[in-house]
Amino acid sequence: MSYAIVRNEKLTRAEINGKGTHNDRKAKNHTNKDIDPTRTHLNYYIKKNELTYTKEFDKYLKENNLQCHLRSNSIIMCQMVFTSDQAFFDKIGEKETKRYFDECYKFICNYKNLGEKNIISAVVHLDEGAPHLHLMFVPVVHTKDKDGKEIEKICARDFWKGRDSYRKLQDAYFNHVKSKGFDLERGMFVEDTGRKHYSVEEYKKITNYENTKKILKEMKLELPEVPDINDISKFSIKRDEKILEKIIKPQNDLIKELYKDNLALNKELSKQSKVVDEAVKYQKERDKIIADNKELHNTVKEIKYEYQNKNDTLDLKYDNRKKELEKEYQEKSYNLEYEYKYKVRKLEKENSKLHKIIDKFYETIDKFIHWICIKFDIAEEDNLIRDFQRETNTFLDPEKQIKHEEMEKEWDLER
Image 1 (cartoon, rainbow, N blue to C red):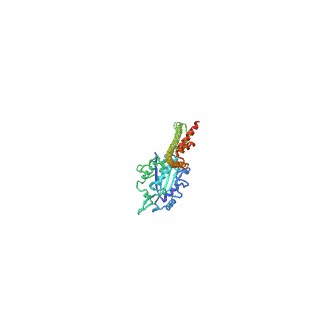
Image 2 (tube, rainbow, N blue to C red; image 1 turned 90 degrees about the vertical axis):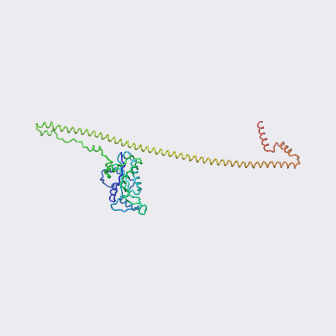
């Protein structure tokens, strides 16, 4: 099982530039033999410092109003190293490795309300053993002065206050990376290991291993130099022939036999090494497939989540549209009903007016007939009306006249 490893180191002004030379790879010739210059271009910054660490710190003091009483031996910066073993990074792959260090960076930004502005530099090294993150920060604490006013001050002693401060750091760091989906164990307690701290070199030993193939490559398979029996026989007298036959020659033959056995053993070890190389290659491919599968699974979950959200959005849009249509229908229905009632009222008004006209027309006709009778001295008004209707084939009553005309039309059709 791989462990979540975090280490803190307190640094004075005299010490920080040396860290900067190493972290920024400014040395022309690296004394650290674990650094592979052909891979240095793979290193990258999460937050890059433009100046040396001391100049960055001086610039930081000018830009921030901080309380501090600094001496030559004061702790002005801390360096955290975040890492795990090589097997862990091989297993999760390049993309998840980057996410892992991004989460480490976010963790320290929020740890004890430190804040990103107090981080001077954060660089990931991929050219030196197992991948690891060097993070330089100013140990700023948020506190109050004597008057109760909230202030910020540089104080490593208060930032790491308490004998269990590193234990709390380990707990918080482990809980953070675990919550982000990284399958790691918490680092061992100091009480269990009996160690106060580990140096960077010791971490390299923890996170690296010796390659047996390299040992095989360095082995020299040469036949040991042995005396030539013929040369010895030149100086031997006949009485020493038994020594040659019984001692020297058997010993020479034994050496040659051992040499052959050594060759055979080396050949067998080479086969085993090849099998191990193939197994390692298979394991890396398997881990990559698992990592890709996990990434694919997460992608499917995201697509499913987006699809569900889209469905929810479509449902919401449908509901909203349905409500809009219902509202629109109600408004149109109301308008139609209003318009219908308006027309009905208008027709009723017109009908009432027509009734008045008709009534007035009847009244006028009656007056007209009465006037005619008086004017022309006609004795009976009813006789006049009867004669008018018979001779003109017209009824003074409009309803009777309409019925009469309709009947005539029907008669015409029957003919």
